[in-house]
Each structure stands twice: as C-alpha cells, then as structure tokens.
Length: 275
Image 1: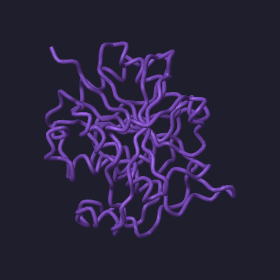
Image 2 (image 1 turned 60 degrees about the vertical axis):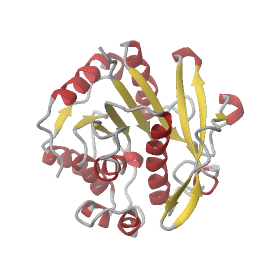
Image 3 (image 1 turned 180 degrees about the vertical axis):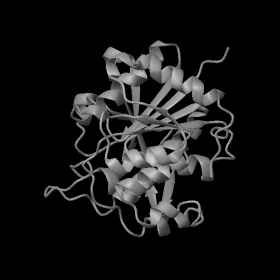
C-alpha cells in the first residue's frame, strides 16, 4: 500500500526562527507524521534572519535556476535545504535576493509590514509548487500553516489543478492567532490576475486583510485546522461560514494522531467541492 505523502508549507519553523505556536507545530507535526510512516516534505521561506552557517543550509543546484514572473518581473528561484538532525527531517527553503535577503522576516525595523509582502507570498507559494514538481513528488495532502501561505490553496486548486503532481491533492489550512491587523498591497488582485486568475477566482483578494486572506484560503481548502485556542473573531467566523471539515484546537504535543486521522478523513471525503 502506498504511503500517504504530506507536504508541509509554513511561514515559520523553529529552530530556524524563534519559538511560537505556529513555528513549533510546523517543526513537531511533520516529525510526528513521519514517525507514523507517512512521507513528508517541508518548506518555508529563507528569511535573511536565518543564520545559514549555524543551521548548515546549502543550495540545491539541481532545483535552483528557474525564474518566476511576479507582476511581469522575473525573479530567480533559489532552493536551499537544511536538516534537523534530532528529527531526521529536511527542510527546504525558498530564497530570492529581492524578497528574502533582507535581515528581517515580515516587518521592518519600525515594526511595519513590508509593502511587498504580497509579492513575497506569491513568490513563496509558486516557488514551493514549482520545486515539488521538480522533485517529481505528488503530495496527497498539502498542509499550509499561517496567513503568509494563504494564497497556496488558490494556486493548487485553480492554476495547478491539471498538473499530475497536484490534481488529486487535498489542501488543509491551519489558522493561528495573528498580530497582523493591516492589509497586503491593494494591487494584490491585479498581480494574481497576471498569473491568470479571474476576478471571481479571487474576489477576496480585492481587500487583502487578515480576514479576507483566510476566507480565500478556506474557500480553496478541503479542511481547516484551528491552530490556536483562540482566533481572531472574524477568522473564527470565516471558519464557521466555510462549511468545510474542521479539526478543532488541541494541544500539539498530544495531537499527532488527531492530525493523521483528519488527513485520512479529508482524503476519504469525495464530496468536498471547490466553488
């Protein structure tokens, strides 16, 4: 019997970034699922704050080298990899000089979110999918963690839906309590339209707030996970409105089986439809 394949895509993972609820789940859940006999691949952005020497990152030449066009501009895609020895787990990093070399994560020194976070999110999500294609690896489940990955379900279901690597993939999205209370660039919808999405495909992107980004992610996901015990009320309402299967919050240390069972449920649920 073929092993289930689970692709994890996260905006942050410890030990490469400081510990918080999102980064710890993104570190420990893949290990737990791997120990249950599932195949995994794990991706995150290569922010400039990550110490490449300390964490022994190195470029994967065979996966690097393509250009991704974002808003009619070419951006080279660089893929790096590092291991977490205690977990026997590799993490792939999406890198680019324009988007991820700055010595910051999502905010500048004054605490303001970067104006190009929308393009960084587009590049990251597309970079993950293009790299998985190069790996020749078809995931059964794609599990996204955090609002920075909120565009990925849209890309999987609308742009890569005919690709043999993703045509049968189910998408799970984990929502976390977030301090993000602003909005991405108001031209996000125009930049997504450049990739071929219709306005109906991504109507939520016209005003890309925390709530609307989650609503967009939920629309194209097959299952939703409450990643925090408390969520922004608007995000919680969006989960309720989605009509999708939901895994309620549970303590991460004791929840690997619950996640594994949720993946099984999503894969068995052939009634899940995308608008």
